[in-house]
Image 1 (spheres, helix red, strand yellow):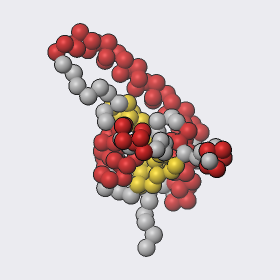
Image 2 (cartoon, one colour; image 1 turned 180 degrees about the vertical axis):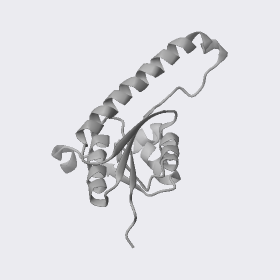
Image 3 (cartoon, one colour; image 1 turned 180 degrees about the horizontal axis):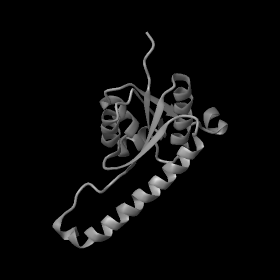
Image 4 (tube, helix red, strand yellow; image 1 turned 45 degrees about the vertical axis):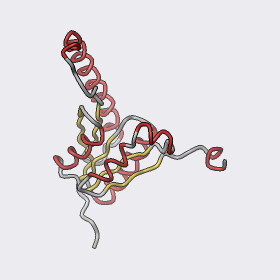
Length: 155
């Protein structure tokens, strides 16, 4: 049985790894005659306290500018993929949770996302968005590893 892939969600953080994942997702979208939905998640601070109320206006302005910049970059990516249907969305929150929620909300059949492959120490310190998405998404997740220069692969 062949999966019926009609909507592919692609989280992008504008890194080389997410660009590689977008290229991969584009190839799948062409092959399956599917649409792409690109999302960028702006991570927001985890807590606001009354002591930070004075900064609320500055924070709102900062987050608006952050969202506008992300939207502009998503529009640039969309312009490069003009042979299929592409929609975009800027989200705010925890990246893994926002990606999983966006996949459910947009009826994604597949998530295609890049991984940074930082290694065990960095993973232990910061966690891994791709791993969390793989564990919690209700649809299949395809991870695309960022290629390493030949020198790093041989060592």
